[in-house]
Image (cartoon, rainbow, N blue to C red):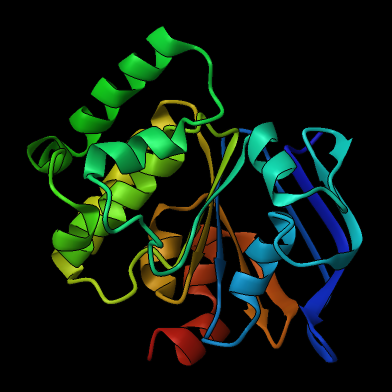
Length: 235
């Protein structure tokens, strides 16, 4: 049984249909990439999975129906999204942003251990812990957003456009951290416009165009696919 199973998913905004019968699954322990150009429907997919927008079709998470759950219920089940654009609380400190990620948790000793784990994963955040989140660099803000998501103890961490607007060296470091997170047992759904970066770390991938899956398979196979090379890698 897959951790996340999506079948025939349709979603959009008002009369505008964005997702057109999308099928997708994520197994426990995988890193799965969803890639495609701007406007392909990647963020809409995550919003539908998180309950932020209404959708039609079948979503199952952890073997339980999840098609009509609220964002709060999705979060409570461990379906946690790191949103595009980070969306930090800019006038709160870095540490308080991380604390907000754990607001539903009652295991105080485990939360303390996770704080230490976040500062080991992202040493720069330990140095910035008392700074306002709005005052740190874009790369540091992305690290803070990812750490905040991890503080929720997710079963599935959904990361939306992690590389957006960041220097390649920062993206490379974030990809390394995703690998570390995966080794610690977190399942990851990575939504990215940077096809090469996303597939370089993923086990499997889905290519979206105009709200539909047009290709899927192992990450290596997709990177070698002539259609992917021509359309997304400029080869």
